[in-house]
Amino acid sequence: MHTAADHNNSIARRAAALDWQDICTELNEHGCAHLPGLLQAQECEALIADYARDDLYRSRVVMARHGFGRGEYKYYRYPLPDLIGALRDAFYPHLAPQANRWNEAMGIDIRYPAAHADFIARCHAAGQLRPTPLILKYGSGDYNCLHQDLYGEHVFPIQMAILLSEPGRDFSGGEFVITEQRPRMQSRAEVVPLRQGDALLFAVNERPVSGTRGYYRVKMRHGVSRLRSGERYTMGVIFHDAL
Ligand SMILES: O=C(O)CCC(=O)C(=O)O
Ligand SMILES: [Fe+2]
Image 1 (cartoon, rainbow, N blue to C red):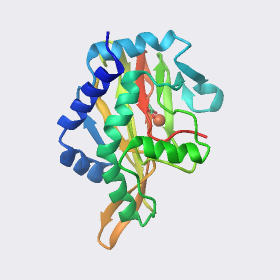
Image 2 (cartoon, protein in one colour; image 1 turned 45 degrees about the vertical axis):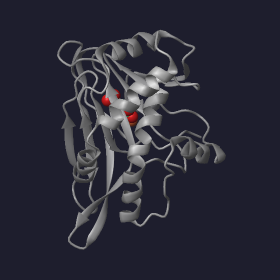
Image 3 (spheres, rainbow, N blue to C red; image 1 turned 30 degrees about the horizontal axis):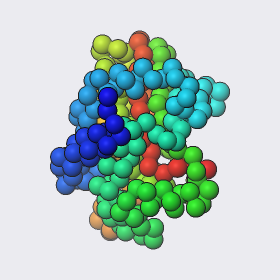
Image 4 (spheres, rainbow, N blue to C red; image 1 turned 180 degrees about the vertical axis):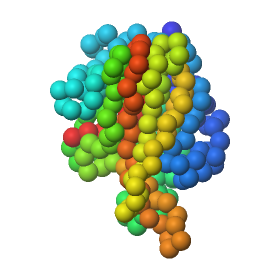
């Protein structure tokens, strides 16, 4: 039996053990940073097993009904499962300085407080009360259109996705795709080869890219290519709450 405190300690230790300088360099250069093996296989399997539970979620979205793609997802309700709350609490303080540097480079006045609870208080004061962490489920033929996870005025500019299934064994196809739209230029796509338990940190919306005349902004989108077979689950950790 794991208590909330166990999860907090363990996830905070994993976050603290990462090379944050390296991660920030990856985020600056590519708009995303790959964290291999952040979760253990058994943690992934437990999250997948809980997909069938109704008490953990506030809503279920069938993607085809909204033109989002094909597949479905569920938003967790508050109180979040311990592991997911711990991920938000533990990763946010490492990411807030990076988010602040991005805003400074882009000439955006908003600065992020050091603790996630203080940022969530800002969301809640603006009526963004609903939790955004989610779990997505794809079957053969399913896909996720390129999109951005913006849910209101307050946006934390970096989010995390964790692949819960193992490519090759559990599914084929279904690659995580990230695109970068540069001003007055053609878009660039990147496929991120994730394995079970790997996390990806990536830009929610715009990020600064250093050019010859200072910084310019590129717009990022992410999605998932069509699954060729099997079942694929992902957990998404978004740091702002939703209207
Ligand atoms: O299933 C995926 O890998 C993409 C998930 C996603 O869109 C998200 O976590 O925001
Ligand atoms: Fe997303």
